[in-house]
Length: 348
Image (cartoon, rainbow, N blue to C red):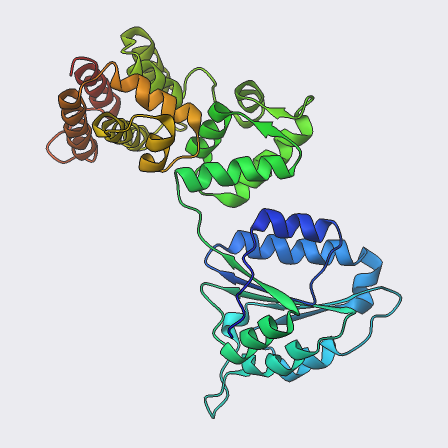
């Protein structure tokens, strides 16, 4: 019977490594390089001190690596250390042999009986490691773990990741703060985690709040895309135009293309909520693909201010503004177009 592959998350695996609970073999694969780089560095830093690295860290690179030499290094005992760490970086570049055999298959025999004092880390970026003999041996012997580092998509997936990582740092983060980071930084995972690391240190009560973000990340808690959403959801014209004026004075941090994309996402979700026969927060959450109850409440609040016909018109206005802001059929200033859009939306 086939052995089911263990499913692990970056946060769970990081926590495990930080607790010095090591696997014999780590296969880190996938399209998001940050998680792969961070995990392999975390394993090295946790398993070895700086002095121990001189004798107990072996680094190999895919374009020059000889798999037999890697295995030989894995079979050596550590010197003055509990562990020896062997890392193969850029394993996707390991060349095939002239007979077209996959060198990665050679790891299969080692995976069946790895040395308990060796931690082997194989970093395979850009896709899945293709060596069935190796991965089958890894699973059947239960000698390691395969971690798939997938690209993080905007929306629910990104928000969930931000909350999960903040929690792993021992911090709570509210819905508005999560949305501010997701909108401002997006799927630049390296920067997201760097900012969260900083915020966790600066937080005095283990709470990451909009005010803390404003003071230390440079995002205004009063003049940002989510405050604009809130103003439009309540049809608060004065506040909406104040925010757009702020955007115009700070164009570098508030490009119109980003504002339009955010508004399109918000009103598309509001339209879905408006047409849903089941308007419970749980049902709408599943339909629009978010884990944020705070955002779902905003969608539902907006449905009380805009009927379905108004929302359909707003989507049309957004599409038109997006086209014109790219210079198609219009030479108007982008922020003049944005103000015109806001006027139309408020009067839809």
